[in-house]
Every structure is written in structure tokens, then in C-alpha cells.
Image (cartoon, rainbow, N blue to C red):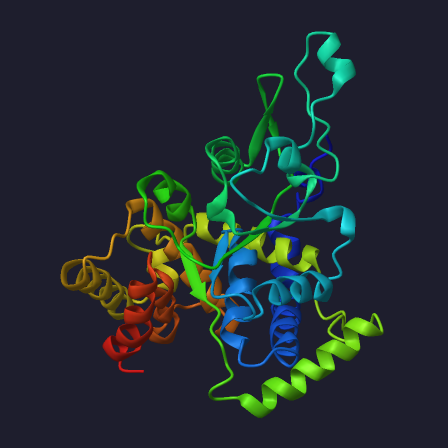
Length: 339
């Protein structure tokens, strides 16, 4: 299987020269896409941040709140070919062959356990898994390996996958323990809520437009502002920055945190995390804290050029594991930040 990684070997110097143009295109992408969905701009922003960071994003909400529509429009807006996209709704009866491909019978006769993965999750660069928590244990193990290690096994040997962006959706967030490992892989969990109460007229108008676009096979949100390559270049550029050390004339070299996360904002970040853990018993794993740092930096770069500020700390709003925690954080984090 060919991998996308072979085409992602851009140097820091060439990415540095393109960085501001790429950032501009990604910002035009997110603001443009927001025009076609009612009150979903914050979710679109999270999708772009998560895509650049190559961290999976979970969208939670009842049926009919535009979860699938968000992801399909995002896929169209970056001009992703169908061959690079995989979408599936999971149930407890879903079999591995539906996700990673059926067993190749001819190879099996030769004693080899090979899946025909073309058109399935391992060959996709962007994937959308709907109702992800309804997956059974066989699917769960496959997904954890793909999300954690970007690989799956063919004939007992690890093989890299092309997956770069993963969006998942669920109507409900389960609380039973066997799914805790999968839930923890989604650092950010964002709600897609009904907008009918506060934006009734806009919802009707936008819904009618959507019906027209669907019937006439029109996709006006495909405006060509940014591509998957822009997203991948941005992610690689920031990865280079994370690994840099700035050498001053005197003293120790400074790392990314010292360069782009001011001390007062970092102390506020620590205070917020400790408050949420102590007062609200929020579980934030060590792994999640590190991933959250990366997401904060990506957001800071995308929104205002690089250095993390207090506004970026709003990402802590999306750390909830249950509906109750999500509702709590939606109110508490902005209050703690004084926003």
C-alpha cells in the first residue's frame, strides 16, 4: 500500500516561507465554510485545528444537528477526492471487513492473512466514523491501533495507514469502562446543539438552501480556499517549531513552551486544569495534557500567529467526558477565564 508520508517530506525552510500564506488560506477556509452552516463556526474552527494537529475530534449531539453535514462540507471544501475519504456508520454488528477490508481469498489459500484494504479506512486520508462508540471489541482494537500508532496489521505485520484526519460522531457518550481508552484518544469532544430556539429564521432559510443544493447537486461551499496539502503542510511546519531550540547569546536554549507559551498564560493553564480536576473531578490523563498543549499551539498559530493567549485556553471547554461535564465546562471555563 502506498503511503501519504512519502509525499510529506517538506523542509522547514520551504514551509517557513509559505507559512503565512498557508495560514491565510486556512482562515479563509474556516470563515467561508461557516457561512453555510447556522451557528457552527466554533465547531468548524475546532475541525480545522484538529486537522492541522492531526488529532481526532469527536462531535456529540442528537440526530438532526448537522454533525454529518459539517464533516461532508469540510471534506468538499478542501477538495478531497473520494478515493481519499472513508465514511461509515458503526453498529455492534459491524465486522472488521467493513472497516479495513475483506480477507483476500486467493492469498488465504496460500496461507497468508491479507485484507483487501483499498477503499477502506487504511487507505483513506480523511475518515468519518459515525456512532463510533457502538463498535464491538474487534473493531475497537483495530481503531485503537490505527488512532494510536497510525498502522494496522496485515498477515501479522504492522503496515502504515494513510489516515491523517479523523472525525467521529455520536448521539450519546457511553460511560461504561471498556470504551474509556477510545474516549481518551479524543482529546476534544464538542457538542453540536440544536439552534432552533435562538436562530429559527436563519435555520429555516439555510435548511431550504441546503435542500436546493442537494436536489441540484450543487456544492457552493467548494470555494477552493485551502486543500488537504495546506493542512498537512501547516501540521508539519508546527511540528518543526515544536522541536526547535532557540539559542540566546547567554543562558540555556529555550524550547517551544518558553518561546510561545508566556509564563502568565501557562500558569493560568495550570490553574484551570487543577481547578477542574479538584472541584469537578474531571479526569485529564497525562497524555491528554500533552496533546492539549499541541492543540493550544495550533489554535494560537491559526487564529493569531503563534503565541498562546488566554482566549486560546477556551479549548479546555471541550475536555468533558459526559454530557454533564460538557454542559458544566461550557459555562465554567469562560467564567474562570473572565471571557
